[in-house]
Length: 492
Image (cartoon, rainbow, N blue to C red; front, side):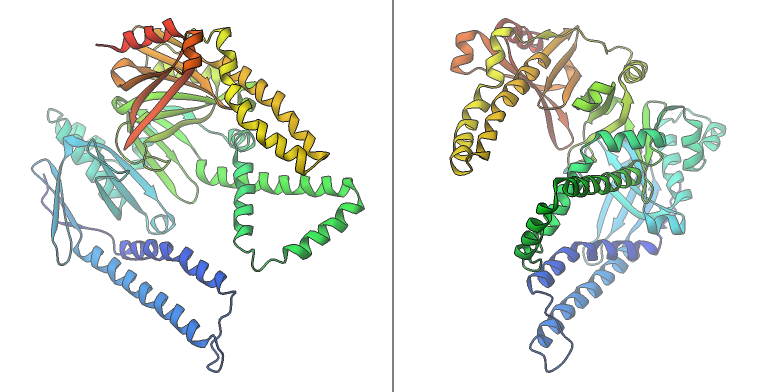
């Protein structure tokens, strides 16, 4: 085991400083916008001192960020000793962290723009004790060869009986390791286009544009724009339809670009007992997911994908930092044919049943899926009909739509117990199939209102650990004896 002291690459000082400066962009932008862009470098101007104060504070903050980045780079060192990855950092307060290699669950690699220019990689070391959505240790910028050495040392520590020849064969670059591992999933350009088209990306783009526009309410002359639009409406519905279509096309193109950047060359490979996910155009990422940390699997089908036979597979993993906030929710297959999905999952987890036969919610429980929604819709419909008569009467269409959605949710709700496996199926809009082993369930609960008790129906919730918190799957208004069967099955 080498005791040679290793340091981060000098570019890590720049990356750390840029990261700190990025966090200051939003408050600076808010100050500039709220001030109405009234800044001037003219000494006689009333806004001269405001300008000097703002940019002076920002300049001092930028200088402090740069100094902080340099200090971190100069004081951060790591080495290998006694089967451990050892870290030491800090200027005035020296901190040390020793991580046994056998405790390391995964090494995740990120390659941002700065990293790719200099042939570097950011390494995130995750252990079972990683909390708060943060890795145990983050090496901001090191060479790929140095990252391979960490992986080699980890393998040596975990496989003490392996001979030196095998260890030398494993000392290869990250790309070589990934290429030698069997590929179980690869997203083509056609899949990227289908993913962008059938996802909610267009809605996200439109809502983002609306949010940005709302921040400029003091600058944009909305009253003038409204009158211009009123004159435009008089021209005819055809031009309005064309304009709406152009906006949707632009939103779709932006959504495709975002999807392309995030999921470019999305590939899943399997190596020993780990899944290796690589993706990204501007920032290349490699995520290592041990199979034994997977707590549950969700198969998500929005209405359009369900109609076309596609699905998204999301895995819930214990510990670590995930893609969506602090929870470890990793999209395993962003877009996959439902039939191919089941075959692939069966190959990864042969002991689980991937074609469950669900016991559905009884017919007598159907009103519970839309009754509450109908109650809170009544005052909204009444207000719209009164204040916006006669066009407000169109809000009455919400009643049949809500009932149809409730009926759809009722037909989806179901469960299956197969040995030590529980499968739940439910929907709000997208159909979700949650499959989990009994030993992975953290808690099981039931709820029953007064009206449900009269109909002998009960709702069930199962929670699995995922990252810093848990993920809950719930099925509403099952037959009471079915719900009690699930609770009895879960009891030790």
